[in-house]
Image (cartoon, rainbow, N blue to C red):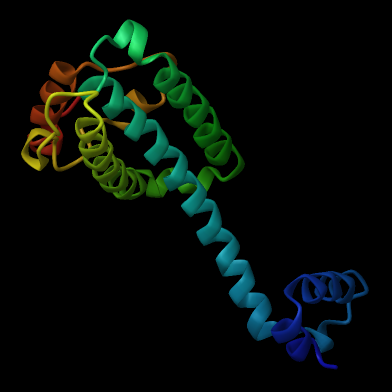
Length: 178
């Protein structure tokens, strides 16, 4: 069975065989086409993990600001989720420093997911009687109001008013942003 056949039948076995071939320097036997694809996928996976952790940070920051009726009491679990996801995102960045160059676009993609999740959660909470009305799309900034620095500040959470003020800043040309 060739390495390419093995790739199609058993990815784990293919990875082990590929590692063995690399260690023994039997490069001519490598399935280069799939090896290249898998190496590229590793990079995409790390970016995807970072996006997921940042989405979790933003989603829970939005929950605290828009859905917690008493942030000191109601937001405790969400604050914990923010802190945990921040730590995970920082770990990904520390292990993959070149992702810092893509951070702005990852933040924007993560924010779209977080925003959508907030609207869905608000609808469920309204149906369950936990809040009086769902949040409309127009109430939530269309783009991330946070800079990377703000997202990674330890134990920093935001009120709805702060998010709205930050969103106004993000509407300014880049030279006016802090």
